[in-house]
Length: 192
Ligand SMILES: [Zn+2]
Image (cartoon, rainbow, N blue to C red):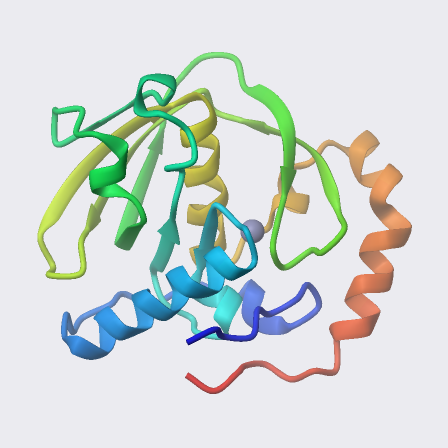
């Protein structure tokens, strides 16, 4: 089922997610709907806040790249990307690696028509649970690490514009304000 995607200005995007405690069929169905919604919108990630739920949950799919172009290890191995994507990430904890931040352009499904440069840590370690509650450790670098940082921020109520440098924000200022005004009064959530 395709769900409506919340837009910048709706207060749900600023809500920190609460821990998922029940790993049941409802959670499976929710994650499935999020994957369908992400695919329909041609995104590479979607967080629960973006469909109106304040949960520590996001889905990603970086499977459009071959796995030899993706820098990752899952539980110490490098399983083929098509086996692990799309991926549901529950109750994540993210640790960013050291090194110079890498700057690259990002978009966000909650900011239609807005793209900008965002500095991100070059590598991450993500601890999370899958939809059965089993714990995993995902290490990623480069573009995959960027996607994970963007989605992790969403479950913390943080948005990519918060990470942009002032110079970049100034260039987008009018578009961002227009979007915020358009969505401010749309309420705090959507039906689950
Ligand atoms: Zn986003």
